[in-house]
Image (tube, rainbow, N blue to C red; front, side, top):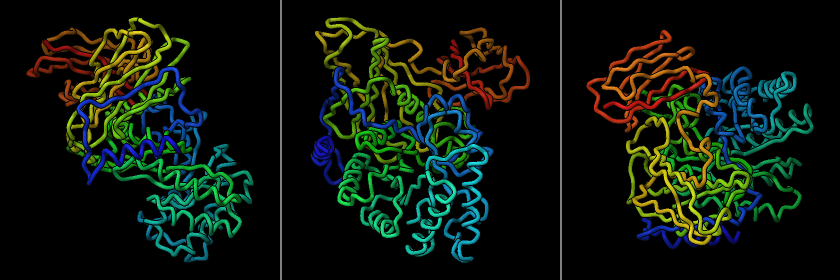
Length: 528
């Protein structure tokens, strides 16, 4: 609570009438000998999906939770390789897929006395048991405050019936709800108190977090916890944010770090990224099913900038997370250290403009490391990578973070400062101190099985524009991007060798991306 009051005080101080007041230099302090609260939960979660994503790439994100629509052959089978994953099945999503006309407002399971709904729920739970596909939480109806055409009483009856059916089959099952589209303590308490009167106590309470104010999340959570504290019979339900990320800013790396940061600060139990329509300048697609909520392009293989932010967050989940202090509520950071290899990682992001493709003023940011434990008055190796925000309003690919510094950092005593000057709004940086080379994010190692790409040859390199590719067994698509992330060449692969002519492209650094549904490998190319 103390941390929230301090953060909210900073928010009020720096925010007035929709405009932030920027200090000339923003400051972040990383306390390298102070462990973050161990009650914090890893907030990597996704929704829906299927087997069309590149599985090794998605596994690198180390998801902790997944909300899926129960397609036994696709959704569930896709997420099961992550053994510790918590799974929530959306009953209404599966019901709509089976019986609905595509608009949830037209679903009215009470019209036949809930006969069809009851049978469907019964079948879902029994199918989960008979196919050995356990579900951790059962969700009744997503966003009932926006997608349910019945009365509040009909919704309560639907939840009551569903809870009764599920627990009659599996007494240990857990329910989650109401999954409201917005946080509203009055609406949540109506749901909770009415179910309490009926003797029903869901194991988790859920809602969505959208909008432009991630820093308000701790306040929402504390308000909810204060309300539950005076209702001791309800126990201590988990808090699930079933969807988050506003459509206007959710694909911006700095914003994504902001959401994750404040979820951690609030110490909730679950957060899943929302999904919306995306656009790449040519095609529009629904990344509920294609692209994994902004991780990949429409092909489910090519990473977007957001993939690298969430990948960096996944790699940050090391033995010890560190305490961070920032003088700006929308300049946020996370850090961890690993005593085994004496490696430290810091992620920093800024989020101010609420609209994707636009940026507020940049700022100089100083990351001050204090109480460094691995050598006073020492010089350490340091690498800094940038994950740039999209400067256009539509989706763009990013083959890998941009390495902006590779050299040394000197500690005076146990302290050092890393200067991130002209830090653009929406960008994110990853700072590695004494890194293991395998820790540094790079396109060359994102497949998780680089031996599958070890036979690939690109020659000559450097080149004047004509190159040969060899060892393309198992790949079916090639694209080449310039340093701006623009695709300058794209083709299907029909043999193990290809000859490509890129002239009259300009000189510079390019990235060759080779992909299939099973893997993704990149190679750097220099055109002279």
